[in-house]
Length: 290
Image (cartoon, rainbow, N blue to C red; front, side, top):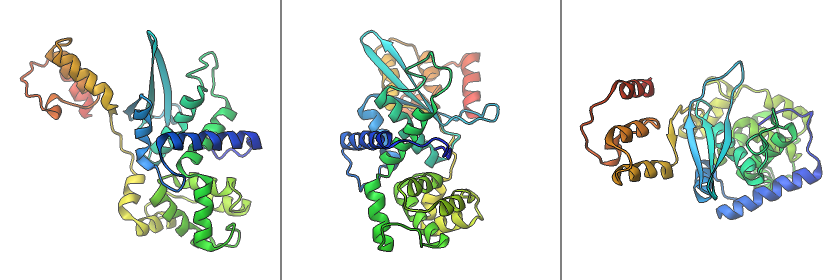
């Protein structure tokens, strides 16, 4: 979700990002005028992509939103998307969409490990794909037309634009700045409008935009602006752990330890057991509680 306008995608790259996003929506079974929001996780399940959620700390002034990893197991390829849940919830949704681009196109460091840094154009393409996947141009044009009866918003005041953006965010669940990017990249707002709107403090509880967002839908405002800090893994992995225990492939201690890695306990799944926790297991639970 970069604001770096020194990198401009050409018409062919934009067309390709839109095409891929449209194909992904079609595979997902969602029409262009229907929001995806947090249901984007279902796309991962449909494609057997495992989601690993963890609140990664910032490192040396940088913040990682997500990454993708894959391993080969015989003839099978297992793909994981790591999601940083110390990001805001709307950023988490955008990060998953971004990583779906890398999964779909097999691009990025995960697929070209000899590359030390992510290619900037590839990252720009991934951001554009994510934006198109979450809020297709077709739907955005219709929203502008319905709200203002015009083909663009050049003459719309900033205050009216903020109310419009808040309604979009409550329905489509993109981050505020991603929506401003969408309006600008589809030439619906001017450069001056873009600069004024993008630089607005959108997270502050007492800021003008957050007040508008809360007035539009207070519950969604809270959710999208929450750093969930959740720990978890796709249900498929949890089911595998449970099956391994039920089939006698792992003992009770190992079962409890494996579940604890994902902030789960046996009684969450209907198992009642009295386990003698060893020191390592106690430390594991204490670290999860922290």
